[in-house]
Length: 184
Length: 154
Image 1 (tube, chains in turn yellow, brown):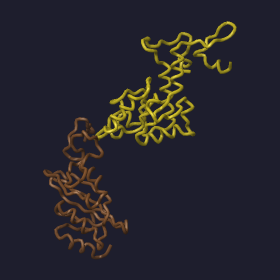
Image 2 (cartoon, each protein chain N blue to C red; image 1 turned 120 degrees about the vertical axis):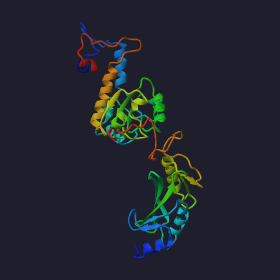
Image 3 (cartoon, rainbow over the protein chains, first blue to last red; image 1 turned 180 degrees about the vertical axis):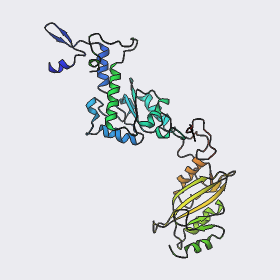
Image 4 (spheres, one colour; image 1 turned 30 degrees about the horizontal axis):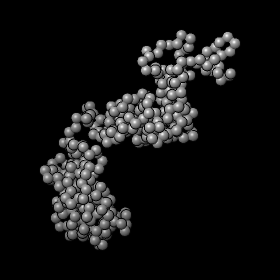
């Protein structure tokens, strides 16, 4: 009961008790955002910070980012951690296309966001991974600290919790729920 | 370094500019790249001992190219020597060192990739760093690429 009290987002109270009543949408989003499986994919120095975030000191498994998958077909989230060069671009695009739907992308670091230090005067660098694939969360830094990547993952989870099932209108604020509660 | 090393180098390469500075160890500036393979053969002899290619690259001097070869002695890795050789921009051709130094193969591919210098006798002269369908050679000073964004103010 104590745990259920905290889950005000999807527990409806009835006279004489409470019942976990919710929408399919909320429940699916809740499941999705708490079981993101990232692809094992690092491009350069930002990947070191990403692996550090997965290691015990920061432990992104706490957020449901459970296991780094070696195959894109088992993953639904990709952290583009590092510099994307034009030679890597077709490979990166293919990996993205092989990810299981629904798929999410975090552009980690200055290079993946905009080309970073290689934005100007570089013949080999893609100026931002969003020229190749859609990006959900941009995370600046050179490289970002693991805390920053955790924040990016929380931001992505917040974004997923607002997703609508196909064919539904954009979400309006729930009349009985505050904004902060709806992120639970 | 023996005292008379520069004199020895000068007598071995009469047409070259030999100096003590300007590179890793002594610098041998050859008059033409055609003499490069023979020069390496001479430098690998026991009295000199520079028998290993440590680095091999090129420069674009605007009107011509220049090959820059760093040799090291396998008997004493602190002994190094730099060989430079000019190449005409129009032909952009040089003899390959692969038959003598196997490790020069990827260096020559890299020079071909980024400078467009062709090496006669290279067994597998393909691009090594850039994608296969790339056009142009990016480290040339006159390289043009519409994807390349120039820094404002430069």
